[in-house]
Length: 238
Image 1 (cartoon, rainbow, N blue to C red):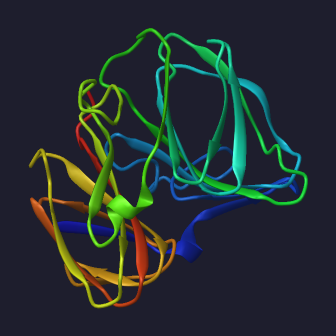
Image 2: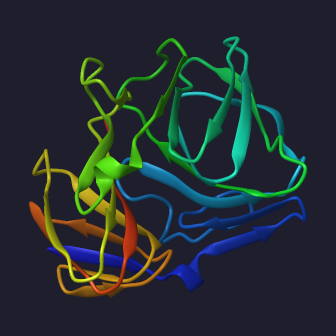
């Protein structure tokens, strides 16, 4: 087993006034040759958008883009004709494929919006752009893993063009859990949203990240109440 630890305070940081962003992997003006990607996981940005502010319309192509609101709301508009608001409990997946323009805006005038923006390299290039959004019942992740994204279009949850699975869990202090990889060749990237835990004996705190390869199971012990995002992704790029 190989484990790569990314402590929260080692992430790249950009403050633009209206946007405060932490980058686990190289992004924009932050470049670290040792932190470009974890397998198919290319971007993990922890963003806060000020009230009544946002990203203007901008392009993407050949990337799977996931947005997970942590608090507040984001208004999304894209060149496919979608106009949606995503809120805490929602997850959004967009396959950029041959090319798409989109904007994200905080429609609230009295509070910031916090969200994760995650990019995965796809396993198919130049697909038709696609949009997906789903609301998940957070009670279904109480002391267990709730699958929110996988590769199967017929699974009943969000899907993407990659052999990847995303799970979220809200665990109470003292709980233990084991995550078994769906594909033994994949790696697992753990991102702690809140709280403290141990993953295969490695202590992790809020906003720490840990990439694990060469292990088909990861054992968790929760040393406080904790919220966690798991991203199981291929380590070899097609």
